Amino acid sequence: MNPLPATSAPASIGRREAIRRVTLMLGVALTPGLLENGLRAQSAASAPSRKTYLNARQAATVVAVAERILPRTDTPGASEVGVPAFIDLMYGEYLTPEEQRMFAGGLADVEAQSTSAHRREFAQLAPAQQDALLKHIATVAQAKERTFFHQMRELTILGYFTSEEVGKNVLHYDPVPGRWEACIPLAEVGNRAWTR
Image (cartoon, rainbow, N blue to C red):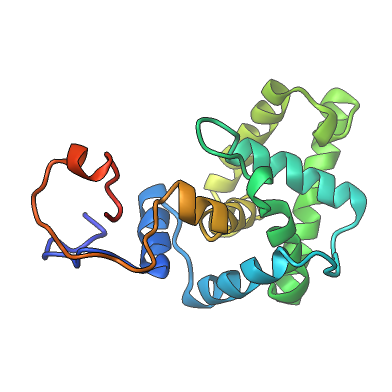
């Protein structure tokens, strides 16, 4: 089933629609409330003197996990665009108490598994060890409806694709779109499929 309608789409899309489409492509379903809170949190996360909610160990785990979910390639990694600060703010101000308990418990579980298997904190493991541990956690999470791993993945993707850096330089979002031109070669528009 194709999640996007087959009807003719407008020439340009807004940032919110771009995020919705990207999350559909990645297999993440965002609730409208999470998306709305995410957009609010993204602007607040970049404030220079904001309150933090996660302790130092939790924050280090969030940085390491987010970076393994969206590592640096030819595009910036999750840490480079402020995803850990975004997750911290979402945790402290927008997650329900039950979601906060699940998230904090999940971070503690990641650390417990890391310490048990490698005798080191998750952030200190080699990337291959981190990946193996996260794959195990993801495999266990597949059998359940809602887990820490689902939360972490959802928040990482939301934080990444709502960041200004990604919006401007990866998605090539054009806040003031030009005219719509159907069926033109991509080479004529700089090989960018999002907007002209």
